[in-house]
Image 1 (cartoon, rainbow, N blue to C red):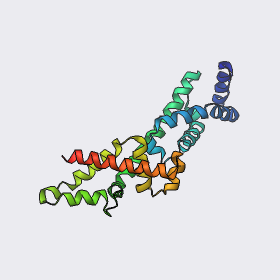
Image 2: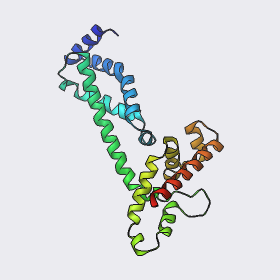
Image 3: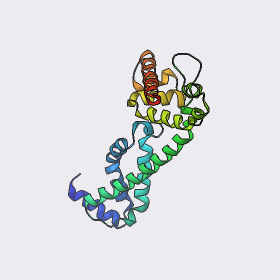
Image 4: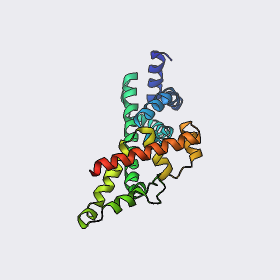
Length: 202
């Protein structure tokens, strides 16, 4: 679509032409999808489909177009990006809140060594003195921080497996790997997590 055609659509839409508004939405939907995918990190995208954020943004575009005061394509794009940015921020904020609620679940990550104890339980067991027990809350925060610092695929695999309860088959499909490769990814992630937690405690 030429710049002139875009300007004509903007003018028609500002005059109240609903068809023109719909055409503008269709024109920029792909662009918004690309932006949303880049702005949402992999952990958030494991919970939220970027297309949902785009859909919300398109609804707001349609609802609030009468407030748009620009006449140029650049002004329209800037306005669209602001709508999307607000929705991405709200989505991330909700995700962080959900993450805080799931800290206890994250502290129950299974130990791949097969000891039968979660990592959180092992931390508690290591901290047997009264002063150490008083620091369990800090240890849980360290665990969460280290988990966030893992390589993206390892951290995502651990969260999907032990927080969301995905099966190895689901993980294999998600990462486009065999179940054996997915299991290996989990094993490496848990080993890295244990190693880094050991470094943190030293």
